[in-house]
Each structure stands twice: as structure tokens, then as C-alpha cells.
Length: 132
Image (cartoon, rainbow, N blue to C red):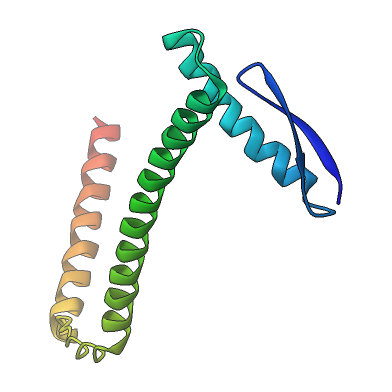
């Protein structure tokens, strides 16, 4: 069983761990050390047992807060999944009927004729303007 030397609050400790878990131990020790250093910076010199207890409690508080946030997030995810399932399960909406007005062909023909006449009048006016 490998042993690691970890430092918590400026104090070294030798701790054994399972083979392959050294990195997890060092990461956990870093977290505990950060809390211990915060504590030492605020209070000053503290006996090792008290420092470890208080640092552990501070980590436990953070863990409890993270657990609460995780639980709330999981509940929100479950709620959103239910909403998605409900939306997928609802029937497709009825297609809406869209009516497009159709202009009768005799009206289109009359408008085409009027446009042609208007162009003829415009051409005549242009020709007279050039002649004068």
C-alpha cells in the first residue's frame, strides 16, 4: 500500500492509500489544505486536531451546499424531461387552411390592357415633348 506525504495547514502527514489512488488522495489533501490555510489565516495558530476538525467541517459545509445544488438541478432536469415528454406526446396540431385570393382572368386581362394603354399614352407624350 503506497504512502503519501501530504501537507495540511503547514503540517506534514503520512497517509497510506490504495495503489492507483494517489492522485485522488493528493487532490483531496489539497482541498483540505486550502480550508486549513484559510482557517489559519483568519485565526492564527491552532492545534492540529482542531485545525483538521474545523477544516473538515468547512469542507463538509461546502459539500452539503453542492449536494443541495445538485439535488435542485436534478429536480429541474427531471421536470424539464417531463415537459419534453409531454410536448412530444401531444397530438400534432390540425393543419390550418390558408385561402389565397384568386384574381379572375378577365380582371387580369383588363389591367394588362390598361397598362398597355398607359404606356402608349406615355410614349405619345414623350414623343410630343421631344418634338416641341
